[in-house]
Image: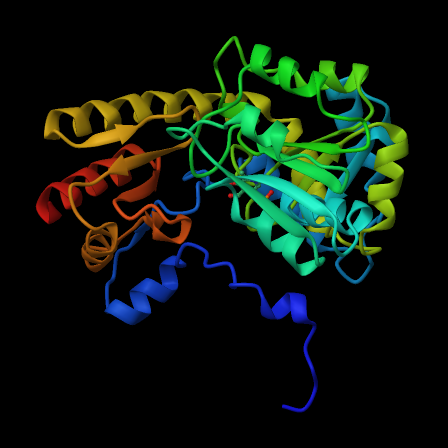
Length: 361
Ligand SMILES: Cc1ncc(COP(=O)(O)O)c(C=O)c1O
């Protein structure tokens, strides 16, 4: 090839997602495979949501509403924010990319934790930013070191709250103390993809923080508890000024009409999703108890996934589980050699995972 690629793109290691079920079936000749690798909701979207998608499919000849008007009104009411405080993305991933595109110029600095959600790094590097990675301290954010990493060139700090892969969050008090010393020229990005799963009373009320500070973006998603990962829809909440800048950085029709219809219907069917939330929380307890009984170490966190700390190389264990039709996430991609990340599935999926793990170990 004689075309010279963008040098920042050459620095990227492509994101390696959890393997799709069909690919594993094809490759390993298996008829039954379960996926506990991408922190998805193991149950489908509600019937009401499926009906809304089918109805919206009739109008697929038309471009979607780029402004997501109906969803914007509904969500604004739900969150008690102004409609112009919201931005919508093709997954919350896209809002991460929009924030970088909107605020970061080549040579600017972006502060993230290590390990943390991989998209922060990918988005920052492709924009030519310098990424400052601050190691976790025993799976927790080292906020003092993150504060120290901020310089005059820092434009964005990413805080996955709770983060992936740690499954842990920065608590209210720590967050308030941290924010006090961050200059208002730095965008503090709270990624709350797992917001709905958190039960802790000390979880920060980021919307209240946003009322006091202008330099905050909060993202949430319909991919996790709302079971719409395949539809790709997430959103950001910021001040109207910041939201307007983010909005400039998006493609005109970035959220499909099917995704918009699905999200609106999902917000109308809260009872269904609350039931699943309870079910997954109970299942997480059951899985953790079973691991304890097996003498396997783990970190429970507060999301729909756990980390299992293995007595051997996780690559070997993940490959052996795969052969048994159980897809988990080998955490070597994050530099953690003895860990797998496992999403909480349905009761039968969890049983199958535990049985397979017992056999493998
Ligand atoms: C911490 C975190 N943020 C953001 C996302 C992106 O979610 P989506 O783009 O599907 O909204 C994920 C997905 O796994 C995640 O773990």
